[in-house]
Image: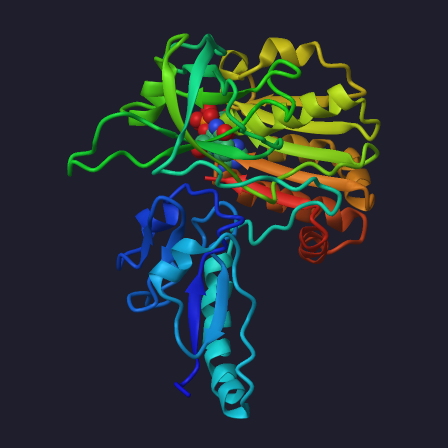
Length: 391
Ligand code: NAP
């Protein structure tokens, strides 16, 4: 038997095909086909640069193998294979030493990262990867509405109609949009990923349509394409993606949602779903924007009853500068009560930079109730009650 080796893999079920790992890998070990994003065992040097940039933790998969899985094998997977039983003492002894080095590297790479998430135990099963680069779905634009009034801050609510095409989605999932044309090297553009901001039964109930929340980025190829779409235009979409950032089906579950800017997209989907099904557990939202006129969904939010959504809207460039984590600290009692409740599910979405501040806020609030945040967070993540999607 060959000397066993550790192989770095990507979980195709959880990966949302944002290609950030591929763009980050300094040695070109991460590649994709129409279906999956995979790691080339011959090229990967375990530098770990890809670990902290992954928004879902799907990148953090390792198998001990006697023969590495080839790219072709990985391209075919819908789910990861189980760890093989290598069955020899020699194999396990060699691996312990390897594991220490890997553990040290991983611990460093994981600093500040969301880590690998699990779906809520009561979440429905999400369909994933039904449409890919080679076989995208064609959606028709049904609406393109400006959500913000600030000059130079154009956030759009885009409604896409899937017609008769099967496109089952769950709140919290994402889709890829393929901008037409090619890049400077003549290659087709990679899809850009957007969270779905509508509930599973449609932007309009019982219609086969979805909505997205898209901010126009300076020189952004896909965001400018999407923000300029007109009704009736046809759009190529991939997905749906994501099998963990999902809602619990339990109507009594309590939601604690923390988001910045367009990271509000899945929170809108969650809130609408909970309102439509008459969930009773309630939801608390900490939502940060630069100012009122850059806050997507500002008007509609004010119409949501407090029993459905307890809102804490904070602004960093209007009045005294305030971030979501500052307001969480101000509302310590409320957050502490949520942290103490085993029915609470936490969702964090938006800028990568917010994670550190939000984690610090959770740490100091947990201390006030005699709880160690990291222990609680890891337990909640294991129970499918702690979810982060930041990039
Ligand atoms: P933005 O307007 O640039 O920022 C929103 C707010 O977050 C501002 O008030 C900003 O304050 C504040 N902020 C900046 N740094 C922070 C920190 N360290 N801690 C807490 N708050 C901080 O946001 P955006 O342009 O909409 O970007 C949202 C991000 O979410 C993007 O990176 C996007 O990729 C990501 N995202 C989007 C989706 C989606 O579906 N669209 C899904 C997941 C993630 P100042 O700028 O005034 O400092």
